[in-house]
Image 1 (cartoon, rainbow, N blue to C red):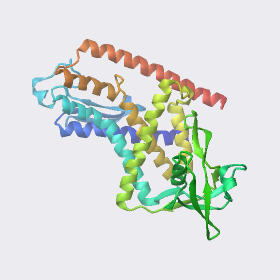
Image 2 (image 1 turned 135 degrees about the horizontal axis):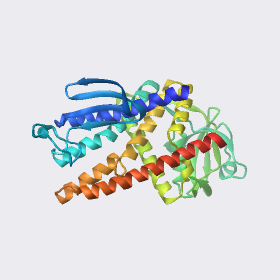
Image 3 (image 1 turned 60 degrees about the vertical axis):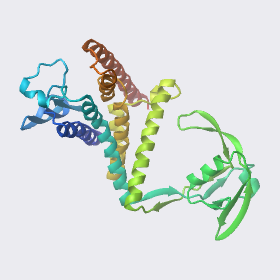
Image 4 (image 1 turned 90 degrees about the vertical axis):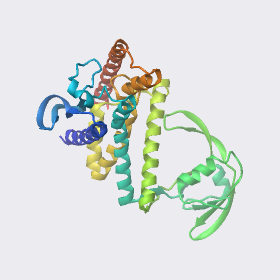
Length: 354
């Protein structure tokens, strides 16, 4: 029951912001909105304000905004032409469609900003927890408990910054200063090329010296503007990771077994809810970025598919033919149905065999 409630909260927030983006930009450009629905299927609750019916529907796996004149071949009352989506300039239609996923990115930025303002940013200290026997670090005299404070005279405050400098040395000898129980000790070490794996399980080689982090973290308070900048960086990093993951899936580098659907999201949402409200809110931000990236994919029936048609229209100066659009829509629906079947299969397999 907890998983279902957490899933409903996550999905509800994501859908609301996505559809709110479409709705607000449509209204900004004078497009009439007939329905604003959270969920699909039969109406559970509803209220009409002006020409817009705001409703909650029975199937909570999505939502939609139905605009006046949304279908190019629909018959439009001449009186409704000024508020018809189809009769707006193509660039306005592009902005209305793009607003959904953009608002999902905006939601992530807001959440990350709030987290950074309240909790600051946690960083891993450059403190050595273990020295690998026979490694360059062992030969150089590194000891557990040493805290790296400088590399080649440049201050180092985080493990990430230290690892980046070592990896980028390309095997050049480094002069590293460590704090050892309050005493500064100068060490000289030459990184060596060692086998490693990327986040996606790919075999690579990178320069290391053979030390493992002690796992010590510290909270760094951030100002308003630092939080704003960091929230943009975090959103970009998650979006980039999502794009790379999709590319790796297409290339076959990343196993399709990693894909998950509603059941997996519900499980993960439930776990985050148990960890606390902060963890659940952070999870919403991550899923929101993923949803934005996926919606930008040029697949018909997704926002990205509509954007593709409108961009083509802007280039060739005429709408894409209805026959072409209908064929593409059928292909897009077929692909999405196959994907849904596959992720449900993955979800059920995890439940049965995990």
